[in-house]
Image 1 (cartoon, rainbow, N blue to C red):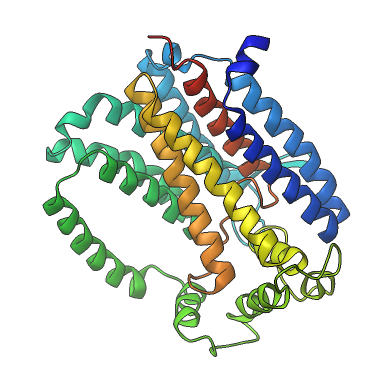
Image 2 (spheres, rainbow, N blue to C red; image 1 turned 180 degrees about the vertical axis):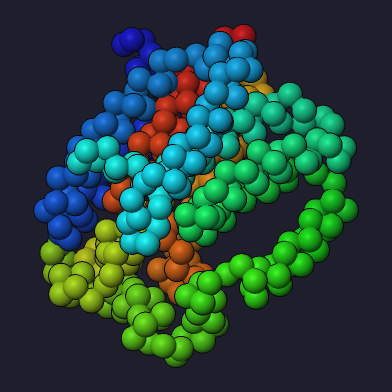
Length: 359
């Protein structure tokens, strides 16, 4: 076990642990309850990373039923959540297990990455064939539809990003990409009128019109911009952010934790957070390119795609350049479910690094 610890990528681990530390510090300024829970989840996340790095996942993925079991287990949990879970904030996304809550859609992200990494690791040479494109679409579409029913449009967009990213890195032909964009345009036009709810359309309208409903749809974005701008170069100092401490900034520990951090720690602190995040991305990519088999390569790429999608959506919401859809900042936002699943993903990536020298 000690040798496995030594063989891990400690630059990657260090960036994750520092980001978790920054999260705990920020949450201690926001809420004692969030601070306490995040410490517990951070400790669990560290242990999960270190433990899963010990497992050689190539042995497990040799059995197709294990891959199928992970995927269909996540689908089953989505069905259980939809039919039996109590609504929380008008969304059926969480399984309530005593005092704990688990967001099943986070597990679905991991399951989709695993099943697509397994699929493309074996089929990527024939990606140009239509049948090879349809199967991964179904792998994405089934859980995405169930998540959409919750409703959780943000997670659907992340799942779509994972699926589309896999197609792009697998060598999809440009003509197929063009056809895909045309299909998406048609689906988008139909969805705008027939699928999206009024509040979802209002968020898109608010994105292009910052003056639209400043006390409603655009309120959170306006407060986020104020928080980031008022922090200046060095920030207002720990526990001194007025937008956070006076309660003007909603969801300051989750959707807008970057804005909260930038207000108290300034542009310097915000850039430090971004640097830590991209250190994680670059190390994961390096591990993926140096992996010994296709599953590890595609898994690392899938994880990077997911993290980048979540980062872009979370930061875009904070800066007012994307609609607010409730996506967390990986390893930084408060949230036990997302932190646990992200830790599992990083544990598998560390496993790819640990066993990179073995055939």
